[in-house]
Length: 139
Image (tube, rainbow, N blue to C red; front, side, top):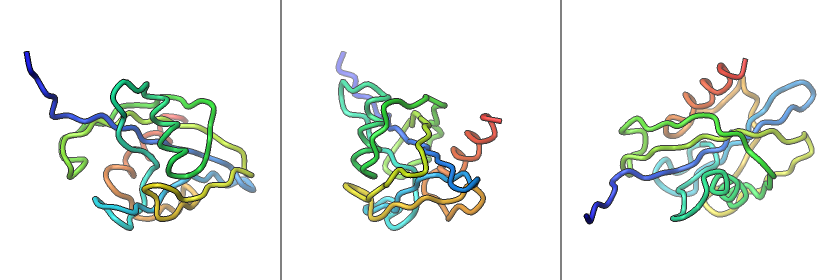
C-alpha cells in the first residue's frame, strides 16, 4: 500500500528558569512565516527516523543555542487548524535550566527572550494554550 500521511509531527519546548523568584519561559521571535515576527515556543518538525525527545533537544539547540541533557514529555496537541501549513501534531516537552543559562537566536529564530510567566507577549499557533495548560497541570 502506498499511503502518504498528511499529518506532520512537530515538537515544542517549554524551557523555564527562575530569576530572583520570578519564573520565566524562553520564547523565540519567528524569523519566517507562518507567524513571522511573532513570539513562539522553540520547536519544529521531527526528522524521519528521529526520536521525539532528540528532536526537541535539537530544535531547542538550533534555535536558542541552549543544550539541555533531558526533557520531560508533557502532552500532544493536534487540533486541526493549529498550523496554517497543514495538519500538525506537536509533542510538547518541558525542562528547567538555572538562571545563568544564556540563550542566543540561531536558525529560524530572529531573537530570543526570557519572559515572566505573568507577562507573556501575543503568541503564535496555540502556544498560549500550551503554556497555560502545562502550568495548570504542574500545580
